[in-house]
Amino acid sequence: MPLTKSGLKVMRKMMKEYGMEKGKEVFYASINKKKAGSSEWHNKKLAIKKRVAAENAVERMKQNLIYTMDVLGIDKIELEDFNVSISNSNPALEIDEGFDLRRLPLSCYKIVTENYETNKIEIKKYLKDNGLNIKGLTLIQKPSLRIR
Image (cartoon, rainbow, N blue to C red):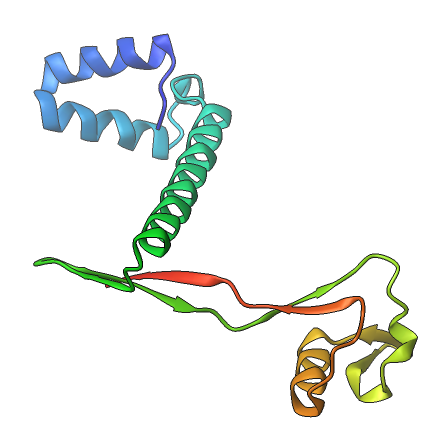
């Protein structure tokens, strides 16, 4: 959790008084118990930004690994602690903007409070079962990375 200047100052005092580990425990316990003034010790917005940035970095690393393995023609990497493999994901349905969904049969819809709502699962099934290629509807199969 990112700390403000005042949070770092309070944490240092507690670590000096209680020792390194115990001081951190007391500090974070004070925040969790919402001790007076403790809300000023950490920056939640910055923590959220850092988490999102870390998640984006992980996604970029995965995409880079998929690309590199594809270029090298490698499907699987076996290491002592874990394995990495690439497999095709389930196809995703992409509906082009402007596609007239009324062209599809009623089985591709579900009724939600008296209104029709498209059901992508049924549309994918309809396309697969009937072997159809309909302009404006595309089944996309992307590689997925598995780390075990």
